[in-house]
Image 1 (cartoon, helix red, strand yellow):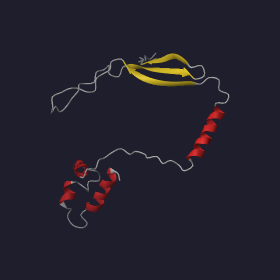
Image 2 (spheres, one colour):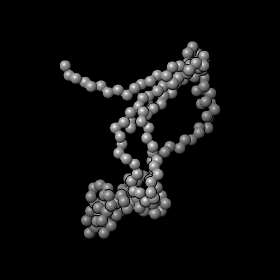
Image 3 (cartoon, one colour):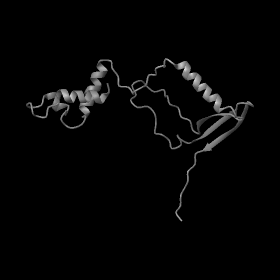
Length: 157
């Protein structure tokens, strides 16, 4: 169940447009008839979930292994072998971003400090992308490919 589903169920259950009499105190305080989700309702739901040891997490997908996984693997393997049959050069590559000015992310501070860190410096995102690669059949490591961060100043004619 998602957080929005909880909100909708609460609005359906306790919302009152004045048809059945005056709205309840809960309905008024949480602004269930306001047409949206009020901050009070969002905070109330979050606190109730935390009190019951529930948490709000991002959706994750659990994978199920198909019963015919061996056949699927054999078919995929054959496709790969067929595709690589006439291949004379096979290169495996990976890339990584390297920061010119690395920063620490953990700090030693007095207990009870509310905010830790500093303003993000303008050079915190400066760096380059390095791509390293190797040729499979000859086992040669190829020269690295470096992509520098560039800025272009466009001037109209």
